Image (cartoon, rainbow, N blue to C red; front, top):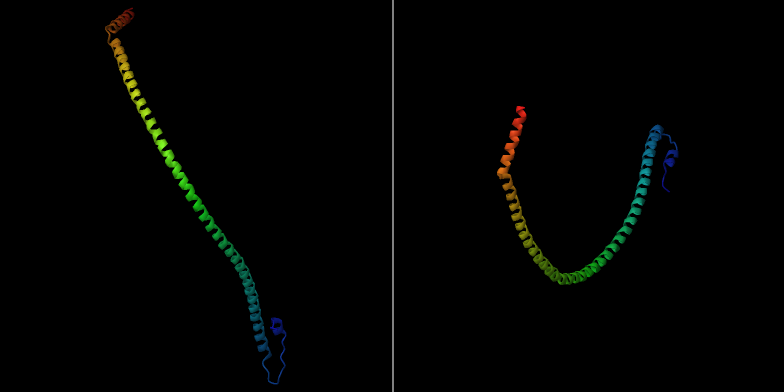
Length: 165
């Protein structure tokens, strides 16, 4: 059974005729007790740390096993998904090719219709422009008409008459 600090503290030596100095022995034993207590505390702390680390190691070992299993399952699932995606993409490409021709034909037809409508709008725009030009020219002729000059002279005469009165 290992010594404890109390065993060291309570240890008494027999005295001989010319024995050791009792105070020196007691001081040394006190120092041994303190050091021994520190060693015991450190040992307990280290033992506790070892237990914690072993517990963590067990936990991490379980996690590692779980992760390895998960990785295997994920790989298998990825392979299945990849295979399904390949099949699905093949079907999508086939369907897209079928629809592409139909869409192109519809787009060409729509393009032709729009081109015809654009030409019709251009014609209508020219007609509108011509009519607007004729209307503006007619309005300008009215403004340039000599009748306006006579009307303005009459107004000037009326103003002079009013001023003279």
